[in-house]
Length: 415
Image (cartoon, rainbow, N blue to C red; front, top):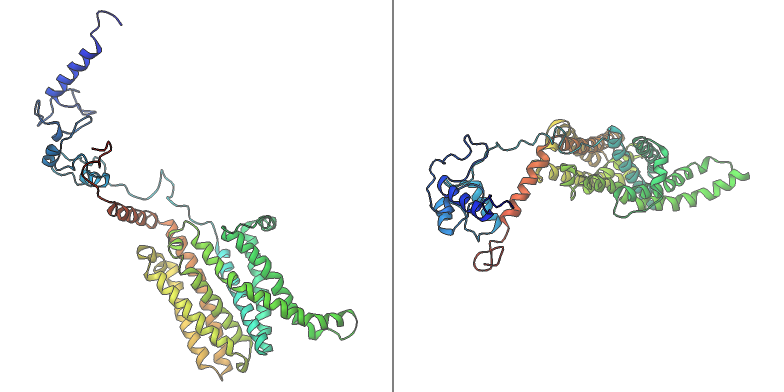
């Protein structure tokens, strides 16, 4: 150090004397070190503002601020209120949640309409296999046949929609390399892989009576019925998982209105699957054999109506996408068609025409419900308010529930 330069201690002492007289320098203020309006030389630093200002409890009370040993949440609230002339003033307006550096806050699902159709066809396949098992166990051949054939057609269509969304058929095969219980998509792939062949064998067995009685085909005629009965029961056992896993899959995403509706989505999809299967039974079986289909209509309609009502009323702000726009129209149409289908199924015990009309209404209701849930979730992902507002509400609730600890030992240094 040069002997002509003052010591560091002298420089610091001069700085503190000038600071006591002129007050702290505000960044960007003209003149740099001009006296601050309202500054009191050698006054209490507790009521001052700016960087490096100390705080005493008496000065903090005078300035409308929280004491030094107050909990962090209380100090934050004191800063927000501004509390008089010494409080912190907001220098920027509240942020608007429209984007994040020009990008959406949450990326909307890239799924197209084929995934919504996949949701419907998967539920239809599951419900139809349950209906077919009921017809098998109760001796209703027409009901069993309608359920098995529909189940095979629906699961084949469902697999097509899934592979079409994946882009390459090999990707479905690659998903079978692992079995991850914590991944709904992985579990669903294995459920679909188990259900599909079983539903296929059960449906093919319905063609056994058309085979010749002799030769190799005659052997198939004798072996297919018992094999079809066993396969039909295997498909029925896996059907509940196939009907509901798609609801778990949607709720496991970050899409706000899907994620918040996680308790209701599996029940909605289960009810929709039963209602669509009831529609198949009412369309494909005579009224004398349609008893299980009518019971499916009542049970499925009740679940579907209850779940739709819940997601439109329980979720607060996140219920709005289900009640407005395309999703709202579809869900309202689904509720009306479900109610009409259930009433028609109960009233059409002796009318083949009324039963068929009720079956068509239940199938259309299931389509509207699945597409309505799909569009509601996509709409909630596109609008930033459905992401930001619930986050702010949760943060405010957590802050209000923080324990308020004061007294000796509450400060960061224990006193």
